[in-house]
Length: 96
Picture 1 (cartoon, rainbow, N blue to C red):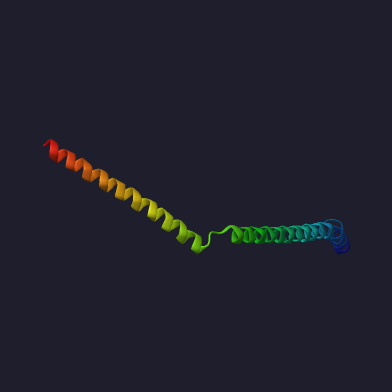
Picture 2 (cartoon, rainbow, N blue to C red; picture 1 turned 180 degrees about the vertical axis):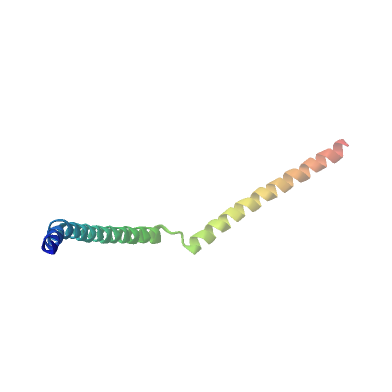
């Protein structure tokens, strides 16, 4: 009787367990290789993106120049509005 149980147990291990464990090991191994390959691709894409951003990134001197131009335009607009407001006030005083 015990010989039959050992034979059945040996058959189970040889026919069911070993192929199943081998398949699981193979699946994990290939999955890990694919994951590492994908991770390398992501790193390469990130590196290319960082290089592209570094090339097209606005430098501080360019931002200062733009800020100065905008400020100058806003000051001109403000001066024109002040002149217009003074004229309007003068006209209202003369009419009043």
